[in-house]
Amino acid sequence: MARRAGPIAGAVRAGEYVGPQPPGGPPRLNRALNRWSSPWTAPDRVLAVHRWLYERNDGRVGHGIIGAPALLLYTPGGRTGIRRCTGLAYAVDGGRLIVAASNSGADKPPAWFYNLQANPAVEVQVGRLHLRARAAGVDASHTDYHRIWGSVNGTINGRLDAYQAKTSRPIPLVALTLARGEGGGQR
Image (cartoon, rainbow, N blue to C red; front, side, top):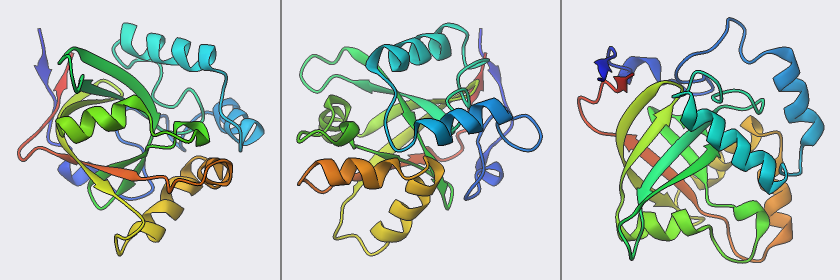
């Protein structure tokens, strides 16, 4: 049974984590791991275990475990409608959560990006909060793209720049705007 958490609209501010956070940000070990592994991405198996842990313990562990704020993005499959889950690092920009469709610098965007184009209504889990949101692409032609890119890139210690160097496609950003009145269900 879901309990209702208080509104988070005022709690989402640029440069801050959303959801549970120890005082002073993520633990030192997590910050150190994030800096040490930058600008590379973790191996696929590590990312899969992170997502599995985050999902199985309902966000008690996983939000900051990789040294950067992470969320779970739930999208319906573009063709099948089957619910898909993806773990992503994010930054906060003016009340929106921003994620990058980097696919670790591959020449094709990640599958979840195609799912968002087919259906922009998503669910986001940030820590223990479950929120409804609407996704909108922010491409290189958007006036705030470079400012937002800098925010996301800084949050994940330069990984976006490293990913962009690996591919010729411009990496799109995705703004996740929380549904109006969404307080977020907490389990």
